[in-house]
Length: 561
Ligand SMILES: [Ca+2]
Image (cartoon, rainbow, N blue to C red; front, side, top):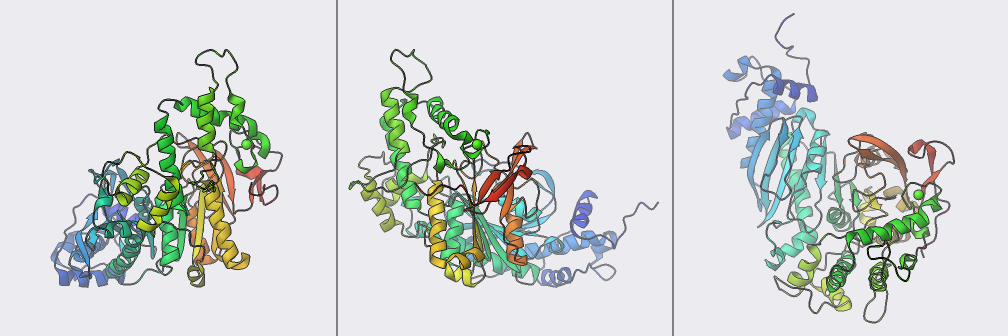
């Protein structure tokens, strides 16, 4: 058997992995003119061989094609785009553990299965971006934009590798500031506008131009995926720039981010005013009691309240009896008062309800938000070290709209996106402590009311995920291909990105996506997520850990309380 590799029969991922496996270094011609010529050859799927440059004689076609793609990649350095600087364009080689930015907070290595062209640059004054381009034979012809959560300032290094592994050209932006800059909101006013609105639009425009240059043609379709702040960015894109993306996945999007941020700040202040009154164990006790009271309302005892709107739980049931021993699992009157205050609807000065409060079974988040103190301290008060003094729910909520008018993502009139045939999948965890589940449902209902059920049915789906906290985590199955969480099976029945793709390209609207719960890498539970207002109902027989035992039905949904 010949030891030499077959030279003509390999394509796609196999070809790239093979060329990596043989370990030979690739020459990287850097001439701009030749780069363009080579790119043309790569576009046509041709590999230069006998008539190629001298170095090609010892290389397989796989290596040649890799060299061509590398040359085209390097060539993007010289591509002139108005108001865009490409600072680096280089091939990233396969690796078991590669860290895109070792200096980034929370940096962790990722596995690179096939080479790709990594483009880094800056749009305008300071909107950092990354664009990862699979080599031409591996490109699926589509662009995936990836959002970032919290107050941004970092790149989405979860969904970029996931997208590239599936053949997407994938792009992300820090939205115009760096997370290391703790006072970024005190910077130039354009920073707020970039963060609220413009950075992702400019990213979409720039990424489309760069990828067209690299591949020699435009993308067939463009999608966006994001959760939390990234979900908000997803909604902003389709509301304000409906031509940027053909399909959008908006996870835990917080349509009314000003209201949400106001509650967050108010909660932080409430808890600071009562330091150590409630320990994490006390907050967990409140959740345990709610679950005990309401778990079986949905017919399955699984530690999850499938629709917490059905649950009527009064934390007063946790009141300590007279003479309770210190350390007993119960709440003192002071503790109960704070629990009730925080779970209750937030009210303005005039007593008007500003939100619906926190659902039973939702664990109050002990994490610290950077966005809320920065918004009220820096953006509104122009103070770097604001300590919460003078915070006023009504006045401060109104001030956000004045200072950050594009922060809210609650425009229900998305008819321009609908007219273009755009599709949007929204998902939200019922146990989300940061974004109120009822806020997301309210936005969905507003869109349906605005467009009418028929038109809305053609373009929007909401999947409520029982027992799922903010984006991921919680007692319920949380792996279904949302942002930052690739599904165990990459098909439209298990993976939201695949479901969106099937909807956009094949007109297959998603009605049910199976969510998985993983433990030590193994799937231990599956449960369907159903297109709202349908929900998963147990059929009454069969394994309650298997999606096969559940049906999607709209019955039994309680009205809004
Ligand atoms: Ca249950």
